[in-house]
Length: 366
Image (cartoon, rainbow, N blue to C red):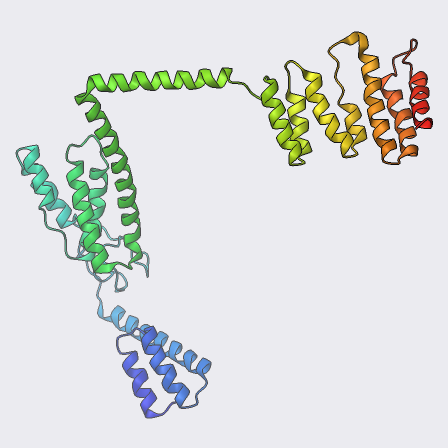
């Protein structure tokens, strides 16, 4: 189909039944030099690779007779497909392998630990046990170590943990990119983190046991510090119960033109000299043309002169509006606020009508 040189390269690349990226790059480069369509060339390569694998599979199926020999499985006894030695099921036909012998390394370690006379001998037996060489044996060995190193009640768990670490180190050197290794590495990372916490806790506990008097003194001091901090928090002056604190914070907020924070401070304040706190906010609002808001922030601790004080607040707003040349706005403001502030007054000097007349007199005489 292609010239002899390219055909020879294709044959060499597919000789092992696998087409690597490096081999593809070499073939594509040569095809491009020959002026071939690369997409078409890639399709031909893929087709030839499929045909090669299909041919090899047919040969294997014909050559592999059915067998009753199970154990270190290299080929499926049903279809003859190549399988990993540690797999329990054929990926091609789904046949499950039975009567497989127990993993040799894990079995030998278990027997050696059982034969050891003391815990110390068992500990060193685990630490010096040889690490398996084959991938299948190593993964099975790691699987057998996992529950033993995670058993906190087992005095040998630390030895199993160290052996697990050694196996992971060897596996990372031998087949670091194998996805089958990932869950074992994640298990090791989780155990190392848990072990670190346990060691810190044990160190603190052991120090406390060896320094009982000092430990008790430290606990007493901590309790006293916590008690003092709580007491300080409960009784310390805040913007809601201390005049100077609230006043200072209110002035800071208004200097930043943060009216919303200032309103919150005034609304939360619940102590003496409340009218002075309100006056600071009202003065700022009047100065900045916030007349409706200023009129709302009135407060009277003396109920018998509330009507007069409210009137004086309205007068302050009206005068500020007149000073800014807002005469018409001042009249509308006077009618609106007088009606709201004195709605319940049906007699006396501060009925809605009388208040409106007083404010209008001020406005007309300005």
